[in-house]
Length: 358
Ligand SMILES: Cc1cc2nc3c(=O)[nH]c(=O)nc-3n(C[C@H](O)[C@H](O)[C@H](O)COP(=O)(O)OP(=O)(O)OC[C@H]3O[C@@H](n4cnc5c(N)ncnc54)[C@H](O)[C@@H]3O)c2cc1C
Image 1 (cartoon, rainbow, N blue to C red):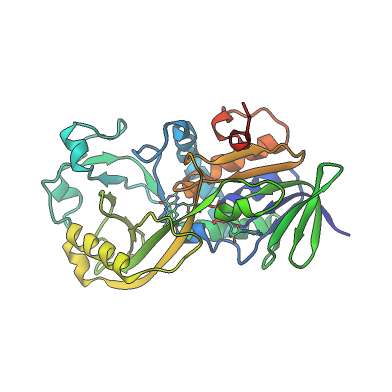
Image 2: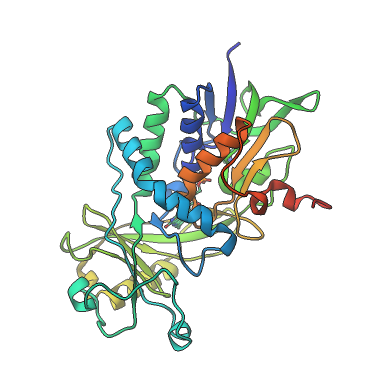
């Protein structure tokens, strides 16, 4: 019977990036995916690589900055190895802060004055007088980078088993021995749970992840260069892709495992996009969708070893999983190989949710 060094549960961007990193270190790796790899949150995301923002918890800043720093290398490696483009863009973001922040003189500390007048940077914006700042951040195509990660993983010899739902992690003498799926079982001495919003459903540990729904919309701009920068306003954000698509987001909803879109929410996003950039009135709607972010009670990821020898977890990346995938892969590969990790991980420890833990 074939066995592996590591089984990764879940083939989203987090599981695939980690599988590649483990394979690079010589481990044999099997990714077990319930549906098709890369079709859940990683398919639904906008792809902003925000390493500094009001929504990034303070405890996450160092990891976010580190991940943003290594992103070009991560993206380049996936592009070269997969032969696929990932649309990493570095034009930066124009951010319209909420009015209360403007009144309080608050903004992101790393944000700077606009490099040029708004009318020059983005002529299509409706209001060139609105207070705004500039962030030197990137964006990426989440579907493209996840597809490139899948192809890279395959080319590097990672085994992928799709359409296989893991129901339990198997133990033998209290150590990990593999996983059971609805169809069969697989043997490995190490297992890592990267099942996103569903991570809490797999025995024996009950990680407190929950789905946080986000609805999105994709427009085809009337001209390819209508927008160059990511535009972020409190009411809506717009992410231009190099092929002329513009991603419009998003809602943040507690709706359980419901991935349906609703017309009212999509129309509200559409109207807000047109108010920001009137020419989008002439844009075609290509598609709308909803995805489930893996949320946690403190909005921080869950990273590290569990109390069960051989069982690890990398989940709960909430609104930042596309950004955090490369640093998560590096850190988790170090932790799982027993190496010293370069980062302080206490804030992300799975033990923080265990009753009576320090
Ligand atoms: C609308 C929206 C916008 C977003 N925008 C951004 C953004 O701009 N920037 C950013 O950085 N992040 C963004 N995110 C967040 C980002 O998408 C997630 O944090 C990230 O995709 C999480 O990746 P993952 O691999 O952990 O989860 P997923 O991509 O959900 O992958 C988990 C995988 O596990 C599989 N699985 C689940 N249960 C089992 C099981 N029992 N057995 C086997 N497989 C299983 C699932 O089928 C799935 O494929 C956004 C998310 C949404 C929904």
